[in-house]
Image 1 (cartoon, rainbow, N blue to C red):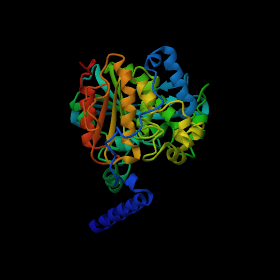
Image 2: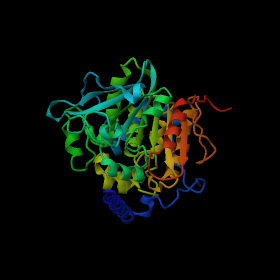
Image 3: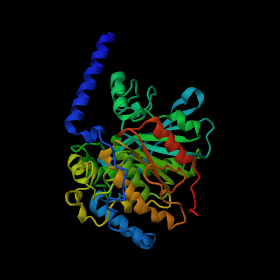
Image 4: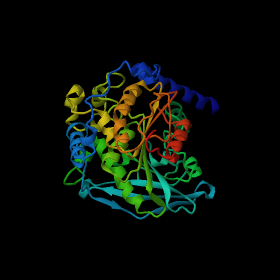
Amino acid sequence: MVLRVLRWIGLIFLAGLTLLVASSCTMLGLNYASLETANKPAATPALDIPRLLTPEGRADAMKMLEDTLYGPWPAGLPVAISDWRMINADYLDGRGTLEELDITIGKGEGARTFQLVAAFPAGAHSLPLVLSQTFSSNCATFPGEAVTSEDGDPCTVRDYGLIGSFVVKSLFGEYIAEAPVGLYFDEGFVYASFHAGDFIPDSTQQAPAALAGLGGEVNPTSTLMAWAFAFSAAMDVLEADARVDTRHTSIMGHSRHGKAALLAAIWDPRIEAVIAHQTGFGGASLSRSTTGETLARMQRTYPHWLAPEAAKYAARPELLPYDQHLMLALIAPRRLFLGNARRDVWSDPNSSFRAAEAASAAWEAQGMNGLNAGGMKEFDPADGIVWWMRPGGHSIVEEDIDAFLRFLKARPGNGRS
């Protein structure tokens, strides 16, 4: 039996490694992101910070995002919320409770429902919030708990199985699926999350019909904008709960879900802080960059992430009237964490840093610290834009969680002397 299990592990590992090698060394993380920025072009076009800080300038900038890569924010799309259901009243050996509810977005036959799962520390009242969007189903995020599975029944097994979980964690990090709720409890946070794919499938074939069928007067035309709206719908729930401190609400996303987190923060001012981890193109990395995945390749591989209009700009990013430093600047003066890894060249950390450099003035113009001037190796969790770079690849590991928590607990600085 043991030999059979080991043989299957070996076969799965070799198959996964073969697929990765067949793609590219950059995706595998065999290269290093450059730490030099002075010899690379600054983000263009330059930001008009005074205008961007006016209501008219902000509205114009958001309209550019909608008209180019992301499609419309679905204002007015109906949101219905169920009551909380108790999943485990003695969660983590009595440290708190695990609860879930249904969120339905849209109307008519095309309305779509997903489950928001929240872990509340025992006796919670007005505690800071971490709201995350996950790659994996709630079964994998909360293993061993009877949260609702994708087929509507309580989860009974780990989402990937023991062997699958081992492979996934080996490739993408210990916390790519399972949430480290105990670590958030240690620091006094409420943790909540939902599986974005339960709302709009992460599928080129299925996503367009799901988006078009939501039944709103304005439907999203990109999966990223729809997932961003789901963040906002979850905020409707959590800000109404007395166990959550509405002054300290943060959202978190990794990779494609980090892109959605950036969009959500732009459109939802209730969000106080954003953790956008390894977001790459369509996120914090410059569209005009030719390093790593590139916007054109991303749009070809995952066209459902972006609006149909994006194809024109992905092919010729110089036609875009902005670049991603504008997106970052629209989040100021709220706090922004940009997570990166040295071997994650596919996500182009170097151009993400240059985007942060160009956006930093938006924080400074509003009396906040912007980006630490010490370069890509510096980490100051109290900055307005916090830059994080660790060794390794495209993943979520304990080192990242520690950095997230240091950022969330830090007191923001108000201008450098």
